[in-house]
Length: 131
Image 1 (cartoon, rainbow, N blue to C red):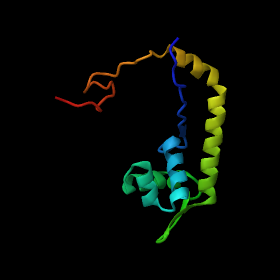
Image 2 (image 1 turned 180 degrees about the horizontal axis):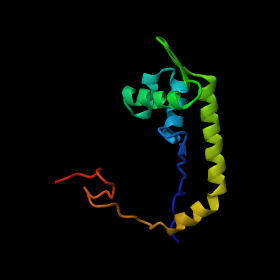
Image 3 (image 1 turned 60 degrees about the vertical axis):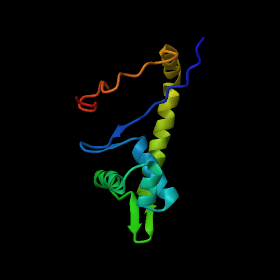
Image 4 (image 1 turned 90 degrees about the vertical axis):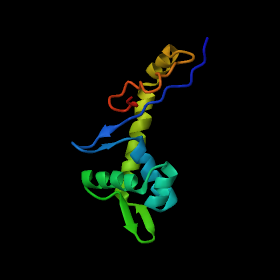
């Protein structure tokens, strides 16, 4: 019998009409906490400073208080930022536990050597290469 790596659950929580919270934003907030600045966190997460700032700004506009305190010397998570990360990680853990059996069953259905789409044929609208 083939051995498959466990499937993982990626949870995205819609906060409002324009913002959602998922693993990327939670990872970014944790990186700011660990690195001490938005620019260092952006590098840590492999994104531009602009992209990191836009994600943080989106969270700030969606929530009742900012997720970061910023200063010339860097950035730190606010109580709101810590609460958002903590709640997201708790929801993520509970959701994964709730569907663990189904994810395991789904893992057994995945081919031993799945074949990716041909180059330029991603199945995603507007994302593939055009001739």
